Image (tube, rainbow, N blue to C red):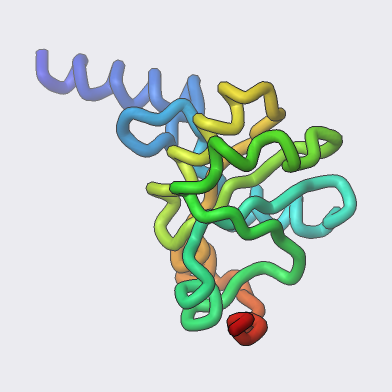
Length: 135
């Protein structure tokens, strides 16, 4: 009986592509899926919700919009809606939350990704040096 239930659960997950973070509706993108979007940078918007120090320490993607997760809802009005969006954080937890916020705001979200997960799967991150803080 347990094998039947387990088999059913695995089949259901595969059928629905559920690689989501718990409590999120966002699809967690694999490295290959993210690479497909990154190959067409003019056709996707990367919204990185990490802090600038995380991006500079770990690395990021060549072109992205940085809006920290706590500021995302109040920033929706100026985020472009003309392209599909990939939300990014370190391990895709905050990215999944961001993807849900964006989708609820009427944006076309294609998924969430973790920069560190992407790199651990062989993806290449760009080291980003944030501009100095204004006095």
